[in-house]
Length: 66
Image (cartoon, rainbow, N blue to C red; front, side, top):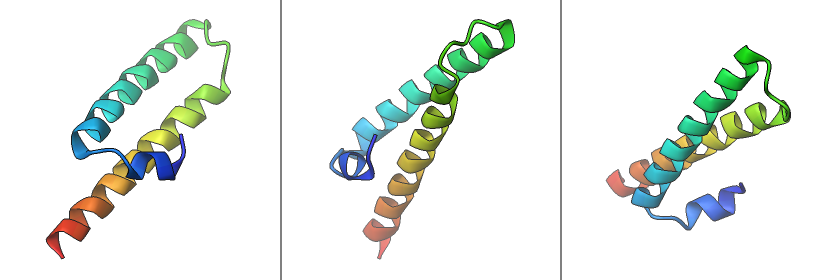
């Protein structure tokens, strides 16, 4: 997911996307613990997508206050 795509979304869409990514992150951690994880790179990708969404959400909130 690119930052440009995230910036075009509304705050509600970002919240939904963040919830979906957190759920996926939980499932990936569970798969890793049970030895069923096949795409190990997906863990890193999801973690970074979560960080991107949180960063852009904070930027939008700061811009709204200023």
